[in-house]
Image 1 (cartoon, rainbow, N blue to C red):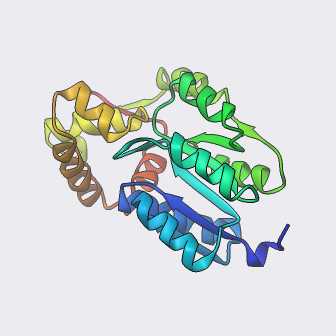
Image 2: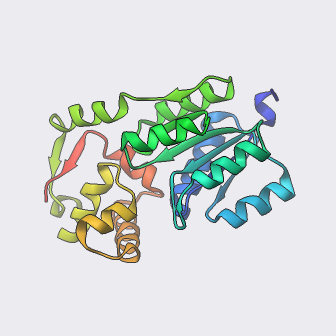
Length: 217
């Protein structure tokens, strides 16, 4: 395996702020020499054609065209040396099982503590698997002890509060839209407004900042 100073990573997520935030986090906390944020599947394959396969690919399970399963299968077939770490805001155990069956190296929830991201990346880079089956249970346990906040306390509208409450539960935009009977584009606009209002650069930063809190709506 290459020394850490030569490691490269790509983060695939259709939300540019999330992709860039995670890529920056990997560079500053993971010792990667190069990290790139990619929002479209076509851009990923073009990137690999130009720069070669990365040491690590961190891929969101839910993409605009559906699940990342076809992308993961292609990665495993064509670039077997790349370590694959799936991320998702959806804690459904079925997702974890599906990616595990594809011989993916690991799975981590987007709302996990940043320290968990560091541990997960370190594990898959050294050849170990990382499937934190306790994440969903821990989230449910912590919720009962979380500090309640109202949307008004955060300077948010009631609808933004509803969106934020579901974000903090780890739901991706598609699931938020379904639960609130909104279009996914409307949810994206609400998320952008929430990030701007609360001064967060990315979804990951926002969730980390509000860890231990819940939104009462």
